[in-house]
Length: 357
Image (cartoon, rainbow, N blue to C red):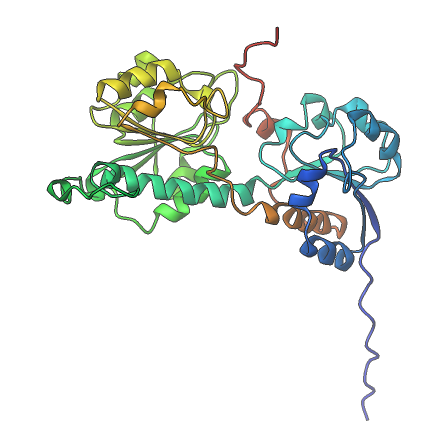
């Protein structure tokens, strides 16, 4: 008679101490949910949230760091420089519960052994949905004939005066998480071609995603009917879409910018939209909120949204980071990890801003 092997109990989850290193109590309450509590308990994480009930100053964190294995950051968290990380000998991973990790890391971070992950892939999903919506609104020229507010009327003379999507070329500037998510969504549409310009992605990756790599930025502009600006805000990209390059776009093209306002010379874009040669759909502005007397509000060829492109789904950021931490502490391969090379392509928030007086 064969003996039945004894069933071994499952290994307990690794016990790790995690610090939510952000002093904004309102933001903490928006990001931390019951799902976070459940995941932290399931993964064996002891999570400290010092600012859960009250705001805390930046000098709070250096004295707390030494006892933690991982930190969660978000908007307004301190930059995890090598000097700061040196105070935390146990610290092995930083998880940014927001977009670009460039907001909380610098070059020195990547000279340490600490790993860096970000919730940018989650944000990319919601922002790519906004991009699909706006591409279709631009293609259908919806604002020219649709009724949006009480008292308005539909313009029945323009109910079919828009081009077929299958005859329009879509241009994507940048090849980060948002573009990758957008390309997946666009794969179900019949377009006149999708062109991508990126200085770091290879043509094989772009081709596999169903698009063509532009040989240069100017080619992207000359061929695009609908241009979506998704590049990282780096010194090389700051106001790269200037007056001379805007002039390369075809008459009737639409510039869609959900990325960073300073990718574009916005005064030059304003002149093009005011003339009627181009249209614009903007979610980001050099001054936010956009002032009530901004001349952009008077332009019929402009659609403006209040930096809301990735405004939904924030409750998924911290659970995603906790999943990444569990993967790391369990010894499994960590996907979407940020290294020094990728860091240099990511948005740098201060790039192109006027220095404070």
